[in-house]
Image (cartoon, rainbow, N blue to C red; front, side, top):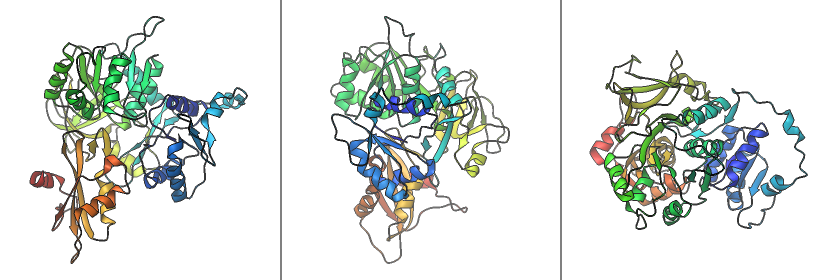
Length: 464
């Protein structure tokens, strides 16, 4: 399991795991011990690679999981090696390490190589089983000439991409890390995100390919350091993770003050991730674009009957990038795939007469905070653990810098009072910073359907 920020060693660790015949599972280095221990158990991790500064939280996670596995530390900036850990640098730089065992490794296209955990709207996160074929296919698909961002790497030319999106997420892992290496790109990594450093790096390192999420679009528009000079080397900007308003695209182009490619992509952890991507000449910012090569899609109604052009329904897809399935989760697999093999994305979409995809809304209820996925069910479960809370619901509300922010509604137990700030702190102590609640509202009861499902739309309509 890799628990690292975006540092140059990340791809070395990832590719080393694959060469040794292992499976990569990534975890957000901002996670708490409680969050990490669940993934240790679900993934059946055999080793954890992390930084020295994260060793204490990893050790606490191992205690919670009641397992004892090796901790390998990537020594960064002269860090001392924590007690009871192994230095990655000593392993990777020791020419005397016996590598003969690697000759015994046999891998097939169908073998699982990457096991990210996709935030679920109900229950625990699900392990997404991605095979060698899935990842390689997706890297090839996004390099089809009509959508490809990079030019051929030669002795005199090398495109430069910034690794600002986390490599522990499928978007950054496949599109930037794996694809960047396979195409011979120079990848400039940012270990920690600082807005000033990000803006300055675009100019300093002559970044010409930029993959981002909506919060970064807003940052580039509004930051005091933003200027045409800072963005002078950019040739391709691709937005993903969540839609961005066409008006914001226009504002960004005004900042850049020249014509460049600025498009969108769409995908999911379960699809390695890319499904559709705007072509190089597209100037339609309200649509995603066409499917990538060797991918099929259809729009269906609630009865899974195919709909026609411009009719709103659920998007179903098939292709070589679609996951093998969820790890040890037959119930979720049964609901994720149709009987004839189509993957249900859970997203509402339309397709026009030219086959161009437009995402209308998410059937899934994930909240997107700075590009990270926050499952409402996780926060609701934590709130219900508080002795004063009887019931809880969490929704995403628009936020000027985060994209969305989690907002909670709680119904208290009879005769009990509690301060909403206490509830916020109760949750904050148990989750990563981007999952923290910004607001809690106390209600008499949580609106639910006859089937017991939370009526989130009612909450949004009345309180947002």
